[in-house]
Image (cartoon, rainbow, N blue to C red):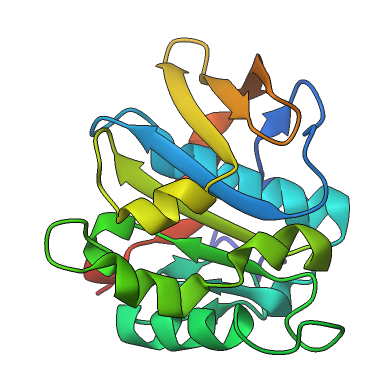
Length: 208
């Protein structure tokens, strides 16, 4: 007897997101660096943070700008040169209200977009020179970088929070070491179910 095939409706179970065992302690914007060696989980930590901000803190998906594909309806997927143009507009215009309030900008492989080897601080300065106002305008700039200098000094100096993940594959968990310059505190923040992140993003070179 033939088996009847039905179109399956997508449910929340199909798009799971990580579970934060403690709430994020930063709520008002800023520049956050995710650092670590290759395969350390820094990208997954960044994606988990992005979804936590959207799902729990009310950041609209259509105000998310990233240089990758995201399983987030309404988000903007931009090439590196396009993202740089967006960053320059967002961090240099509309110091009061406007379209750039409550936005999240996310940079994968930030040392490709801004390299301390091939670019001067001046270029980075012109793109994000008013980044210190991100705190006021509830903007987040999330970026990942390998351990070391990575990005130009100007961007490093503007970074207010540094997060280093420690993966536990057996427990499907990341333990995040958060160095928070806003409050001059360092603490651990565990995130479970981290493997669910794998379905939530793709680098452009992974898309077919």
